[in-house]
Length: 222
Picture (cartoon, rainbow, N blue to C red):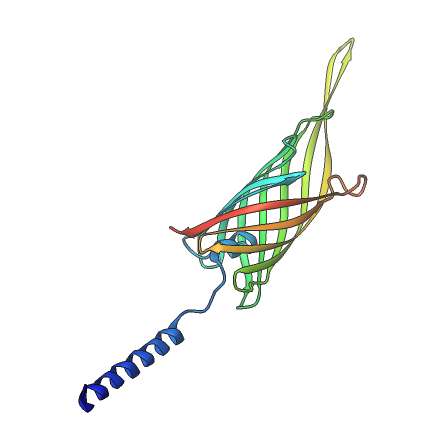
């Protein structure tokens, strides 16, 4: 091997080394998992969607979101308490604030409450929520604060000699809500989370029901 061949090999090796360094520098750093961030923080961007299944005690839920604009999203949800107390809901989520470190979202939902127990409860239900999430690469710590209100109609029927008298009355049921959890992105479109919940059904006349959940999240773009 002559001097010319040695120089050519040296140049080829140096070029390969420089190319490898360039590719390494251009390689994207790990970024936040979109599916988990959208699912837990709410308000996915325009044409993005997130689907969530959470199972636990005593609360479980199924939730779907789709971005209508870059800040506004449609939200639908069904929550169940041991399959005895069920709440189908729908509404909107609005992204209030977001940067690389935090996302804050507000949600407004309306629906219907169905409860099968010693006392059957049915009536319109509404909820306001605030979601706060802190994206840390694949990890997404998050918190949810909510206030739920149900209007429960009661029908009283009185039999009299002159006929039947019917009266309607309404009761208000308030349920403060809090969730604290941690999400993890496995792929760009799939992840999971674990969290603790506290739902105070019928506050302040009852006791809070603490619980836990494990969630699966799927997401992507249309």
